[in-house]
Length: 204
Image (cartoon, rainbow, N blue to C red; front, side, top):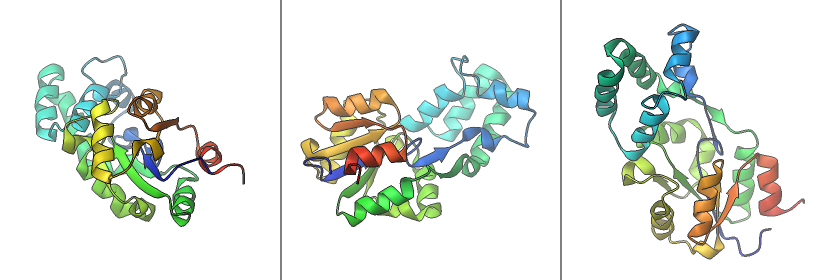
């Protein structure tokens, strides 16, 4: 077991949750429209407004601004995304339900820190019972802070009552893991459940 580890804080999407936003539009629009909506090269596209959602912007504000820049017809695509967001919560990352259960059985305290919205987090908790093993979660949209801002890591440590030097933070985004390192946690860049288990608990 990793020396001194008492607490593990988990990111959600890409670590615990298999989030697939494209599923919200499949069967609703032609593939070309879906590709356009999720175009990484659009500076005011889905990725931009998804981050604004994580920062606490309301759906109404996002739709209003998106319509101004893209027009009402395309804004309806975003509205469809919001209406069908539950489809994006595809499942848990393979191996992670078992790892959460094992860590909990070893009396490691488990927590969550996610760039997400409370609506999505509530849906995740209702659908996947292993999330109940997390003792508490800090949600970016509630705090109007997003990773990798160091303040959200400090806020999480304070709220959870954990000592940063005995805390591990796991995220699939390297910059977020590095930001956790900077506040005194041990950041782990997540690449899969097997690798994470070996790093946390050893080969056995």
